Image (tube, rainbow, N blue to C red; front, side):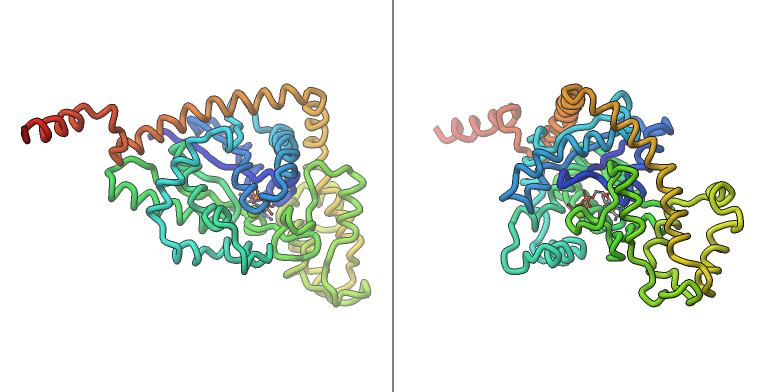
Length: 363
Ligand code: ATP
Ligand code: MG
């Protein structure tokens, strides 16, 4: 069986370091590993519209931002197909058929959708499209026969839903679709990177992000004003590292060689945490270290972005070619799906013959 990756992001803003550690960095590694036959990376504009129907301009403007973020992180259009969801209408058609295989109560149980509904104050007026987006994600994943979906932890319920749809479809209509596996980050801190405000998730919608395209100065300013331990007032106070976003970021980004380079008085992160916990280590010192660590990661990304920004029409060309390529693949799957469901009346000579016979027999 071919090994195929499908993953993507909603163009609701620029990508942030949560996306980077949660999914993007892994995608680039997988892309360069040579272990995959095909890699599809989708800019999910249609999904973004499910909760931004009144603001299509926001989605439209952010497509290029997400594309630039991809390219600057090292997604290579020679190795990966980058495409725009709405330009592959087969995905919508697949969703429509999958909708019949899912119940309303099953959708209501999806914990990620539940918390997103709360976050957006949608309780009394959930758009139907938003409510059903896990089904459309199943269409995205299965259309490309993806075997591997590298995403953050919030996507676990979507993958479960997809697997259920695949099983149900194959059971009712015969083996057609492939069950995908989720690939979560190995590092616990990267599963769901918290926001700079200490909130559970760094998210474009919450305005608590360090963006991949932030300038050096912006990154520094955001780190220096980050939420830490509210009870760690004086340097001498004992501090808490659990729930302290600065330390979670260090868990996500720091490597032993960073200590050698920037903080040689500590052997590793455990030693730094121990000092903070017993007291005598100030937030500013830890934040400066975090800033240095993050800059090592972000500086090359920023530099590559500058290069791609010089030729924006070329980036749209990449997206266009990717979308054409993606549509070919999705159209083939849709054909197989419709064949399995026997929605292929005009190609089915047996059907036409049998109906003719039935009528002629009556004469
Ligand atoms: P929105 O607020 O519009 O939903 P988002 O910041 O949640 O935006 P998405 O486009 O929904 O971003 O998510 C894209 C990918 O990034 C998914 O695989 C998701 O799991 C991952 N991801 C998003 N935020 C984080 C985070 N804070 N930590 C780890 N992974 C994340
Ligand atoms: Mg999201």
